[in-house]
Length: 416
Length: 170
Ligand code: HEM
Ligand code: FES
Image (cartoon, rainbow over all chains, first blue to last red):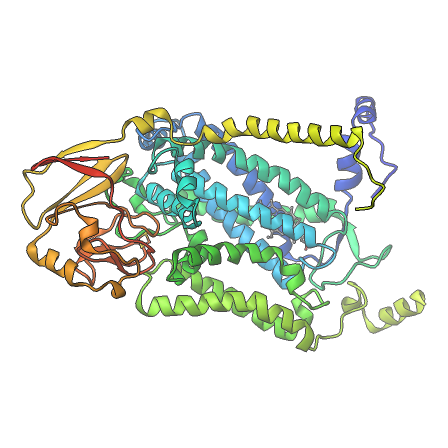
């Protein structure tokens, strides 16, 4: 970080003296010292930022043609698909963009779990991340309601009815949410308003997220602190700008593949049928990225219990920094945790599969076991592992494992 | 509390200012919250009249009341007998059939699953009443919950028989 940065042009100097934006970017963000060993799992933060901007830009232009009214919403979306110039493309980018963003956020979160990025001193980065994730869930859900197809309508019905599980005030709360006695136009209008607002709140949280990241700096695959003044770091620009850029291009190829070749693969055909309050579709399933949580909701035979468990399954993430008792961050040096990490990932994928099946018979039994395991992972295994696990010795620095024997000896001699 | 702490004029001012601020804030926030509650035009659509003549025993219709589906079923004598013979101890939400109907032949109830609001399918499920496909709730021939995640019986709306063949819901 060069504190002595100064803009070269006269106009730059004039501006920077009054508002030091240039110093912030050219003096702080671009030369930001970043661990030199970050792998491609670290590129998803940048990819997520790109996704957020894509959703905002495509959403903005869709809002120029969309009508938020129960009578007209469905037709206005068809109008976007058929009549508006490039409307089909903009809508497919926005719809698949949500899926791509969830794909990226799940990888980003799994990366944090594997390398212990949520641990001291990065607890707040992680907790802000959990809030971003919550807002993403709310935004995606409300967005899915807007086309007012059968799945939109029944997803809105089932999810808003979750609030009716609250004792005593439940019914008043649902009527308040609906602005009526059932899901209809008032709900659609307010969902549109909130769907428009929330991405900007996410944007504000992302700024706090990155700000908090820039205090301790990035974690890294070894999970050890960088040695100050060593050769453990490289400037963010150009090294990670280029690495993030390459990852983004590969990500965009996959994204474009969905948009241009299978734009409806991740959606549900029933949502091309206009909402009908008199008929529930045969199978209602949420979007793929909500399936694990939906499976947890249905695993419990009790309404309030199911809701509490589903909410807890996300809320519990915020407490992870204190549930994990191990001092070692990276799973590379935690032989037991490494195995439980993969078991946990398998469990979440299994829950996702179960969320799409009918909730009875064998599926229901397996859902219960998988749900129990989800919580056991956080409440039993994470606290326990810190005490029973024999971790591998950590390298002294990021550079150490890649140095030759002589260099290592030279380094030790130099440092003493 | 120490003895020598007396209530000063300043304490009084702090507390009154604070109370007025809190009450004032609540008064300002309330309109912003209350605007979301059902409005006058929604409340105005509060009742629906239905002609029952075309419905034969064993048939049902669904009508819309306040945007919600209402099931009107003309039950067969077997269904009525089945609903009556169930003992209360078998029911998660105990209610006798007599309390759920004004005329045993006509079962009128809100067709919304008390779990999460899907519309149950008629004459399906293990109790020959209604079955909700969303998360598998089974209701009997009186619309009472028997099995599955739903906590309550199907809701009975307010209604009156205006004459033998007309019912007013709401
Ligand atoms: C819109 C969503 C999000 C955006 C745009 C975003 C953006 C970023 C960026 C740019 C970074 C720095 C680069 C990197 O390490 O990948 C980062 C780091 C991080 N993010 Fe996120 N993030 C998002 C959501 C989340 C969520 C949901 C979580 C967890 C629940 C999370 C947890 C973290 C953590 C712990 C770090 C520190 C990583 C490290 O240096 O090891 N993020 N995020
Ligand atoms: S909504 Fe009927 S069982 Fe869940």
